[in-house]
Length: 252
Image (cartoon, rainbow, N blue to C red; front, side, top):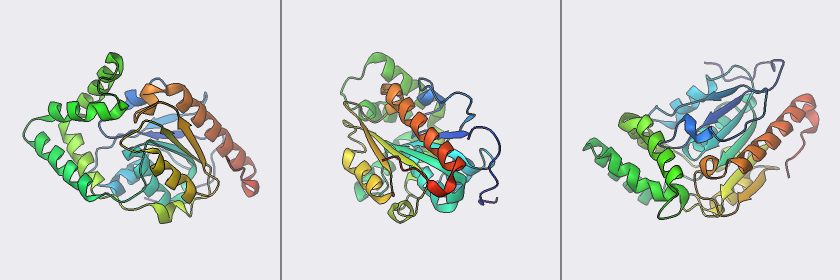
């Protein structure tokens, strides 16, 4: 598969959106993406980050705007490493560009063991509070997360856990990025706290760092309005850059 940047096709840039672990298309259902832009959703079913990045690059021809949450953004870092010319703009939200820590490897092995024992629902319940950073999430938000996780299912969940273990530090890649980038996070995200996002924004030239006060990890479910605004502004920056490539307008 070629990762070169083909000539830009006429018309609006497509959006490729990539969810986090145990999430599916419903993650984005409340987000009002820019009108007239094709939106392609990529499911994370491969057991390593590289193959997931290949799936993203195969989703549409030519350049595109990439939007990823959590594991989806981590896949986005690998897309940027492999094919920077294909990514017209990138929104990374609720994520971490660092290499896995020893306690993360241990947690993923433990979750994989539970799923292998037929205890998938237990894993879903264990992960639920961290999605919204409240011990008792609102009923509708909790229902949506459980429903997404069940549709993803145990097999894909185990593949996602395996993929997490193939992550590498993305800081070197981020320092080479030249497209418009927005880094979006919730101030109450305990899984990927604000410092993670500041490190990403510090590494990327001209990145825009945007916080959503009081929000947890699943921003598109909990606060779809700010997500839609951030993506709309990012798409506008990408379209302006495409029209005048030598004078790329920073988002800051």
